[in-house]
Image 1 (cartoon, rainbow, N blue to C red):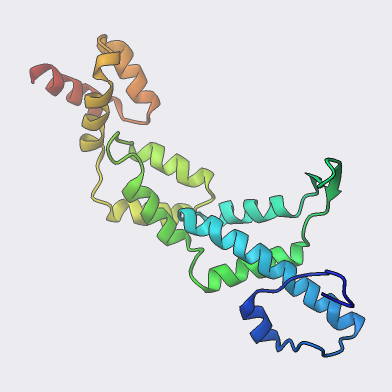
Image 2 (image 1 turned 120 degrees about the vertical axis):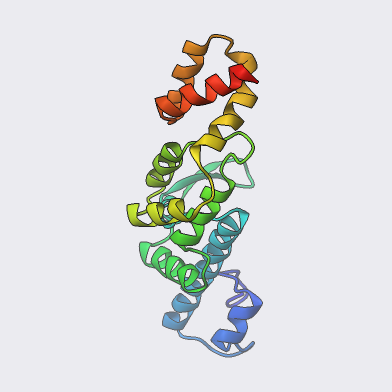
Length: 199
């Protein structure tokens, strides 16, 4: 409260870090700085929750923060719709840098997570994993390194897909086309389908 009117809120850590004292007089400039810190704290908490839900690539976090800079429409208590301004790009950069510094944003860790967990039961081709990671803004060198260190290989992955999808594709030609769309190589598909027919 500032002069009996709500202006902004700070969390307990910000109170301690900023040395806030009840009853102390603050200049307008100091109050504006505290308001900025309040916005930073709220945005940091929201983005931290986003990062903790599951690992995200740096591009995904940047995209998330960019959306926070956009003006949004919100419903007031009276039911009216009003425009709420977005946060400043300066704040989003601060939040991104703090999360990166704390280790919540790390493209190498994210790539390892994605390669290890992506469709483990259903099966995913290396080509598809590569394409997904590229779309998430991961550098090619990181993708190549993580895929090279991974124990996943397309022969085992294709068997998972066949086991899951065989009932939907009795015709091998259509099944081959489906598997090629999933990023598997024709020779691997043919070998796997031949083995499937022998079993």
